[in-house]
Each structure stands twice: as C-alpha cells, then as structure tokens.
Picture 1 (cartoon, rainbow over the protein chains, first blue to last red):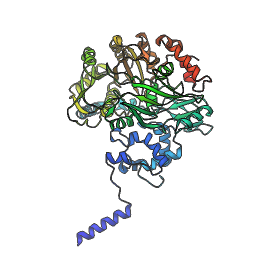
Picture 2: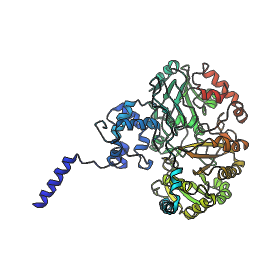
Picture 3: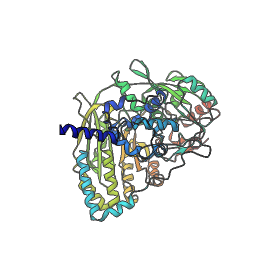
Picture 4: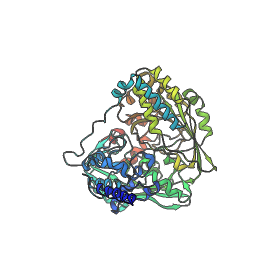
Length: 119
Length: 465
C-alpha cells in the first residue's frame, strides 16, 4: 500500500512538473515523420530532413526532445536567426532556398516536437 | 582505422598536452564564429548564404516552380539575374543574386525509366536519388563524397567521385531538358541538338534551367569499403597501383602528421557488414586540437600525431554503394579543388603538402586526392583525358585567402582546371586556354540567353562577357 502511495505521489509530482518527455524516434521513424502541413512537409523533405532525420549527421534528430529542449529554451527568435544565418555545423537556411521565416518557424516547431511557439 | 579507439587515444593525448600547459594555446587558436551579414537587407529581403557561409545575397524573389510551364513563364518575366540554386554547396558565387533565386525543390524525383536509364527531375537531392534508384535494383555508378546537393547543381559544376574507370556524374547523362531564359524548352542528347547537349551537360546554370535528365544507371551492387592509415610516402608510392586495382580509391594526405588515410571500394557478394558510426568529426576535432596545442612546433606536432594516429586499426564495411560512397560532413569548411593531368597529380600533391607545412601551420584538414575518368562535355574539367583532383580544405572559421596565393599557383603551374563549384580565381582567357571548346560554349550561351538574364556578376567575370 505504501509503495502504491509513493508511486502515486511520484506520478502526480511528475504531472505537476509537466508532461512526460516522449522518447526519441527510432532512425526508421525519423525518416517517416513529416510536418502536418503538406507544403511545409515538402519544404522539410527537400532540405532539413537530409540532416535532421539522420542520426549520423550529428544534427539534432527530429522529435528528440532531449536534444531539442535546450535549444527550444533559447526562444524562437534565436532559433530563427541561427537558421537564417547558419550556426556551427548548421548551414544557412538549412539548405532550403525558398523557405520564408514563417516556414522556418513551422519546421523548427515540428523538428523540436512542439506544437506551441518557443518562449 | 578504428576511429573510436583513435578518438580515445587522441582525447587522452590531448588531455595530457593541455594539462602540461597547452590550454592557453588551445584557447587562443579556437576562433569565434565569422561575422555574419544582416538577416535582411534595407529592402527587407531575406539573407541567402551558401553552405560554408562565404557567399551571400539578398534575392528580391525566390521561386520554386512546380512544372516546366510555370518555370517557362518565370524565366521570361522574373527579375534578373535569375540564378538556379540547389543545396547551396558551391563555394563560388554561382548562385548569388539580388534578382531571382530559383529552386527546383518542387521538381524532384524519378519520374520514369527508359530501359535501365532513369528519367530524373533535376531538383532531386543526391541523398534521395540513391534509395529511389535502389527500389528498381539500380544505382549511380559513382557518387561524390557529399550527397546533399541537388542533381542539377552537381551536374552543373561537374561534381565527381573517384575511380580511374569512373566518370564524373555528368558522364552518365545521356539526355536532358533545358528551359531557357526566353522560355524555350529544349530536349537534347547526342542526336538531337548535340551542340547544346555537349554544352549543357556541364553548364554552371548559365544556359537556362535543366529540369530533367536521362541518367544511365548500373546494377545496385554491394561494395566492400576499406579504410586504413599508413605513411604519406607509402600512399604516394602505391596510389597509381591502387587506382588501377580498385573500383574506387582515394586518399587523404594529413598535413603535419606524415600520414595518409586511404579508402577503397570494390564490388562484392559478401553479406552486409555495418559501417558503424561516423567518427570523422571526432577525427577533425583531434587534428584541430593538435594544431591548437602544437601548431607552434611542427616537429613536435608531427611526432605527437604519428604516435597517436599511426597505429590506428583498419576499418571495413560492406553495403550497397549508394550507402557507402557518400559520407556525412557535419563540420563546415571552405575548399579549393583543381583537376590536374593524371601524370603530374602526385608531384603537385607533394608540393602542396610541403608548401602548407612550410607556410601554414594553421591548416589541419586532410587533403583529398582522387582520380576521375575522362569524358567529352565541353566544360568538363575531365574533358579529353583522365584527371587527378587535389582538394585543400580549411575550417569555416579559418582564414582561406592563402588558397589563392599559395595553392592555386601550384595547381595552375601543373595545368590544373578548377572545380566549378569550389574556390578559384581563374577567368576568361585563362579558362579559354584550358578548354578547347570554351568559345563554342560561349557562343551557345549567347544564343540561348541573348539578354544575359542568367548572368550574375560572378558569371560575367568568369565568362569574360
């Protein structure tokens, strides 16, 4: 009984802290995942996906919250700027020549496994 | 080359070096991010930069037509200069424009077959082409060592792999469709509009926009990949025999180490053997660490590198060729590559390595050495004879002007032709002296783009027009 109470307390405590972080996708799953918007999905598939769906590339894998959450905390403006300018291994524009800033934001949200805007 | 073990050795060795007082040097040699241009210009146009970050522009318009009708209309009406762009992997100003940047990202995929020849839309990224061809049991005969580029971009710059009997990618193009700046759609091959075909196979995106190609393919065979480290002298001595022996062979001369990393691929029926995680980035970090710690004393740096790297174990992998021939390149760099007559390639290489070790202790990237079979495209650097390529890289944060002042003169003295997508300063009459059909190409260009709508300042300088 005590064990059950402790487990319940732990679970409710975790719930109070926030949602459980989902596990990272497998490499096979990463290759299949796409943004919901078909136009954005097309942009993603022709550019960002070439690195962010391949673990060997060294880029943070899509929907890998452990990799993305520290980046997400920097805020949308910083992530967008890094995307447009290029940053460290990340080439400018993620090699998407026709992405507008709103497209980049949508793709970042998708890759970071977030529905809400970064704050 | 058992990279994980090597990485551990290097990490340990460098840690000892830092503990011995090298940390100060490490700090002073790690450079900050290069200064970035503004994200938008005064007109509010969004920044475009190439992969390495050395080229940039603020296109007034960005277009991604979905078909040739849409493209043809755009070609006639869009603000010039119209510059097609793929992944932006070229280091030169080929794609820069403050007019219209035109992407073929919406025109991609394998759309049909003529026997074993694939009809491929030119916006297809090379990384997507491999699995698409493999679905039918086919493959490109060869691939470059990076596969992020678009097919049109790779063909337009004569992008290549390595192998004495294997041509650059455009060697497998047997037909293509071109949409000109006047909106004209031209289908050409060796029989139909042969002059345009020979000009367009390698054409820097200057004749119009290539929308699709007919691509010769080969059976999708498994390859056995070997990677091993040995002395640079041994690699030089054995290189010709290895190009004759192996389907694909290349080596990387590692300056300030006295060593070279060799890579061969040969067809096999053996079962697949996993390649293992790519450790190139860790290797480069280790070389950078050696530069940072011991760059002030070349003999010491060579001794340390030799002690840490020369005992590296060989590495073997077996898989389908499209999975092995290209690798990830997560560390950005700038690059100059020239294609030299095969008989002087290794002599020139020895001179390049000696020059770097004498004058540029800041260089740590390995120098890539490949061999390419000849073809007959007018602007192919491999036109008429086999060529040996030498590629010198610098980390994207490092100064690279020395490539023009120290390295390019060596390449040019040996009759080298520049890679069209990599850093060089060769122009106009200098190029005419290297390419027998140069003037013929310029004539076709003037006929297909009479108003010069495809010409940006970089191309005007290159062509001398």
